[in-house]
Structure formats: C-alpha cells, structure tokens
Image 1 (cartoon, rainbow, N blue to C red):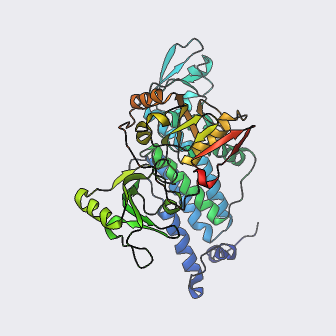
Image 2 (cartoon, helix red, strand yellow):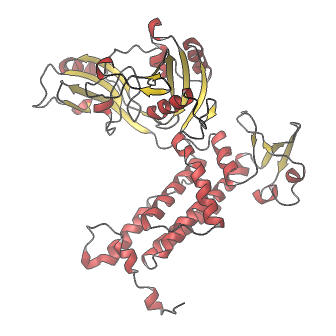
Image 3 (cartoon, helix red, strand yellow):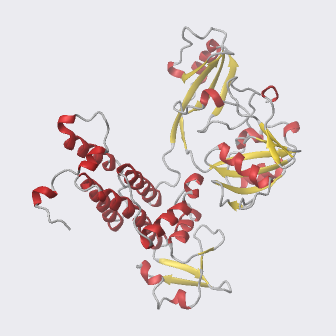
Length: 436
C-alpha cells in the first residue's frame, strides 16, 4: 500500500473524472463532475417514515458513492453495498409489519406465534421455530402460507405476497437480486462503473420506498388526448391544446382517449378494442372530425386521472387456434356474444405484451412457464381461467371494475400489432395485415 498525504488523498481520481457528461466546463472539471455525481444520488430520497436504522445504512452508501470522485474503487463499494443493504431493509420491515408477533406453522399446520423485536432472534441456534421445524409463515392477507427461512429469496417472496412490493417485471428481477447479492457476499465484489453504482442505489431507494409506502410505484397522470390521422400522417396531443395543423386536413379521423401523452406508443399502437400501448389507454370518443371532438370535449369536459402502470389485469381469449391480444376488463365485459367464445385467461402483468408472450408459452406447454401463479420465466402471473362469464364474475369478486364498456372496432392505421396469433403445428404465426 502506498502511503499518501492528506493533500494527495484529497485529489480527484483521474479515472473518476473520465466518467462524466461531456458538457461539463473543462476549466472546472473536478467541481463539475463532483456536483453531477452527488446530485444524481441526492435525488434518490427515502420516504419520511423509513426507520432510522435503514436510512442510516442507505445514506452510508450515498456518502461512499460521493467520495468516488476521489477514489474510483469506491463506486464498486457503493454498488455492492446497495446489493447487500436490500436484505437488511427487508428484515427491518418484517417484524414491524406484524407488530412484532409472527405466526409460523409446523408440519401439522399448527400455529405458533413468535413475539420478538429482533429479526436475528428468529433464526438463532436456540430459536424455537428452528428447533420446532416451523418452516411456513402465516400471511396477514389470508393467502396460503409460504415457506420461509429468513433468507433474501424468501424475504422477497414474503414482501410480494403481502403486497409490499409490486410490479411483475420487477418481481422477475428478484432472482437476479438474489444471485448478485450471494455473489457479492460469498464470492467477491462485482466491479461497478459509476453509472452501474448509480443504478443500484436508485433501485435500492425505490424498493425501500415501496416497503414503507407505495407498492404500485409512481402512478402516471393521464389526460384527455386527441389523436388524428390520415392514411399517411398521424398526430396527437393533449386535447386542451390540440390543433390539426397545416399537415392534417379538416376531415382527418379523430379520436379522444384517456392516456399519458408521454407514451410514445400511442401513435403506432392505439387499438380501441385491445390493450396494445405501453401505458394504460382508455377510449373516450370517436371516430369523427376534430370539430366534432372539440364540441364533445366542451360539452362533457372529461378530467384527467392517475393510474398505476404495474400489476395491470388483462383478459386474453383463446378460441380455436387463435390467442387474442389482451382486453381491458371493462371492454371484455362489454363484448357481444360473437366475441365471448373460447377459454379466457386472467393475467397480471405490467405490459400487455408480457401477458401475451406468457400465455403463448403456457399454451405451448414450454418447460418452466407456469399456468398457475407466478411464472418463473416471464414477468407475469396467471390468476384464473374459464369461460367469459366465469372470468367476468371472478373479476367482480376480486374488486375489479366490470362495468361493460362498448368501444368501436377502431385502431390507428399505423398500428402493426396483430390482434391475434395463430397456433399451428406447435408454432405461433401472425395474420397478414389485411386480417387484423
């Protein structure tokens, strides 16, 4: 080890300065890079109700990251500590969630309450639940007990089963969180570049905030959006500022939807019948001319809303050899008799294509893809299946909005997402565009 003076220790690391935005003033490179890095992680704040013990560990990571400007290797330390602190955060949340009393079940299904204020007491060598072989945890939400051993994998499953963590794509990452945590703890540190460490800290902050607050993540704000198109041109904007412009004729086809205007898939994916956009989109009015849409908007004055973007519920129909794109539950409830035939599947996913891809693999009986519960290979959860009537009734029992919505058979001419896929000879094929 080379002994450095205090002045030398305070010099910026040239490697750290190499990883910075190109617009930083070269005359103040060190100060600019320092401010940039600290401002990144400073924006990843925790909720006020996160306990001090968790907050202290998290802030220690951000402090380590900040000193990476002086020692490049500290970015690796910060990134790896973020992978390890995840398990601490889950443990810190576990006992308070049950007000200090956890109920375990033995092999015969008998309940055994355990009261303690320290997670370590649960799995010490003298812990009653270890000696008694109490390997299953009774959940507060009355779902089926889960196998629980206090390790990271079971802690993540516990948090999801109790609704503390949300998002199917995020759940799919849990296996990698366990893999990287175990590698960090038992095999050696993963080498992180500054942006890698930034990402790890961001994800840790997000998961901690979910544990103590918002399992559905940050909701999106939707507003009435006008979409207008011709066979060659399409445009969309918030309805209150929408204008046809010079490129769009007065008789252009126009619809009004409730959507996030930042959703870049609106123009090339909109379909009133099916869920095809990246973020939730609901049909409101149309089709017609913009002048008619403007009158409808003035008359009805629809207001915006907030909706979650994760753990969305989709209904998919499989009839004959065709698997149809996901429906919104309310749209499915409003379908006519000619569109109700076949087997219907209720799937929870963050994106309609995730639900579609999952069900394709299930119907192919691909190994590893589960037709019941969480899928180990897809960011999706199979909830139930049955007839159209069965599924609408089931959705009502779990609190979903099943008020029928009648929407036109309408889609953007630029939408190239097929409405169904056909299963023939063990392979999925898409219809030609003229059929969709």
